[in-house]
Length: 365
Image (cartoon, rainbow, N blue to C red; front, side, top):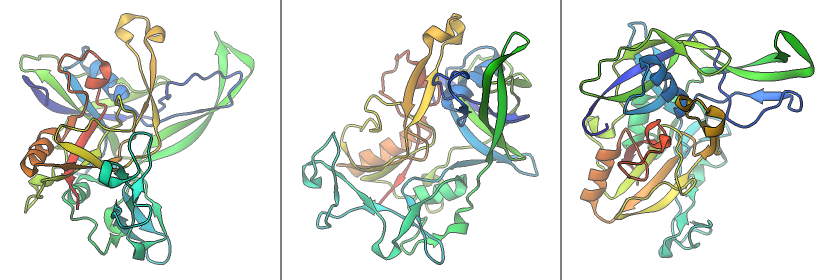
């Protein structure tokens, strides 16, 4: 939470499909297909600002969530990218671990480090040999399952049944055909196809926001959400970020700190997260980069202010090693549920306050 502010959560439940462009140029005359992407941190930050009629201090989201029968919201998060599932027979899920020094090919070769773990190079993440062959997982898992993962308890050394992850796929792609218009007249040859995302019944998006103590603005009941005139209903929620140290017994976090990306991140080092002082990056498992556009609509020149960036996707995992266990535990405690950025308090960049780079912390072995 931002210093000197209080935080709360808003829910956004789309009334129809969600259509969010990725920010890249699209010309219906030359491109046949326009694909939508999942709502990004800038989408949810814009919706929060629209709901209040002014921007809060900071926004952290979006988080997909399912509304239970009693009206409470259950957050879900992307499956961590270091989890794999066996492909033959019974599907069991395993966590990949850094390769050992003596293993052939244990060291990862990148453009940032040398090949040897001994001189600071990265290690490849590898599955247990008895588990191979394996494939990647996708989808979303509930917060309590993710908390167990962050604590290092799930999956166990012998893996876990795939069904026990309770994977959900709440966004269903829908193909739509459109025709570009000029006024009220169809433009010849401007037929195109677009992909919309339809949330399943009872699903929506959450965002945490920070406001000053004297904040008096009330949220509107509905706001525009994404493009194509789509609307979402707005409400309040009482939820928390998953916290491995809140489990019983609490997770023991020390020198080995796992960093999980709860929202897409834009960092100066590309895929590489800002490594804190006193730590080094041992290994990472990141997904394919995602396009993320930011605009400054309040200036009235949104086209001129539009910036397209490539973001590290939510669900990516980083393994840090701290020289001091107490410092590692302190850093993990302070960063859980926070947006990890350059650490410049007066940085005016919208990326810092729009929800990019929210991390959850845990332990790895």
